[in-house]
Image 1 (tube, rainbow, N blue to C red):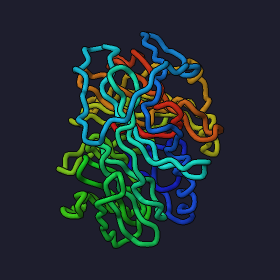
Image 2 (cartoon, one colour; image 1 turned 30 degrees about the vertical axis):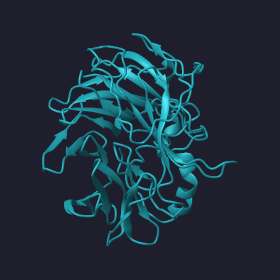
Image 3 (tube, helix red, strand yellow; image 1 turned 90 degrees about the horizontal axis):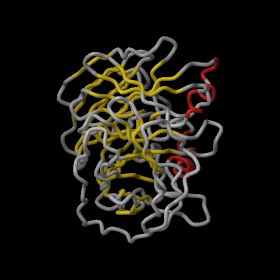
Length: 376
């Protein structure tokens, strides 16, 4: 999950790096249809066709398979499949979030989806967390999908609520809001105050207690994943957690590439998924070639993740790893961007990688959901 700025860039889920608040409120009211929206009813979406292979496979042309199902009650416990064997094509349980949609013929609520063992996506929770209030940051959803956090426009306050908008907790931020909130875990939120290069990072419990200043004088907004806070330069990654454990890593990526972002960090901080890209005059991402890596945090060694689509080996501005989960067997589930900057909206595909970087399987996100975030 991301603790990025409020301006929207090439990555809807990670919203990378720092940015000012000015002029973003109106954009964000529109961008929730373009930041994580979709159209689907509250029945289980048909399961998109999946592929399982040891070689690179295309990300387009999937045909939804037949099958429907009912919504799972909110109180129903999640049933996780058995832990996959090493290099297995079996998928772990996945949770997907899509935001409330506006500006369409029929407004859609925000939704939490879970992928069932038979490959269907089911809506397990729906709601309108902010109830139409003017907000200035993307909604951050807790890893368990039960809470939402956001910064409220012109009120200098952080709001945390249940996913249905109830049980609101309002926390005065007392400073210039510069970084969107993100969740360190399902009960603790991180947010940032202050100008670029002078950002203060603060953690707080979902009930407003336990305020803790973690860092001051930070240059940019970080990304949060697996309870770790990551900040990058072109060639380095620095991670820390709230307990004070820190690590600076210099990934051994090829010359000519710069680090674009951190998509995932394992719970022990030992494995990361990073994206890197070529550069182009003026910084336009439309001509970038993305290359994604599994990074060993101790040695800095990297393993390149095979492109899902051979076309992504060309500088077309897509193929970026934007979210992910590090699995217990050393493998990965990675959300890969399948759209280019010229496309309207976004598109993603989920890829199951072996620890070696080999593609084991891929699957579509919930049918009709072009924007969304992998929660776990």
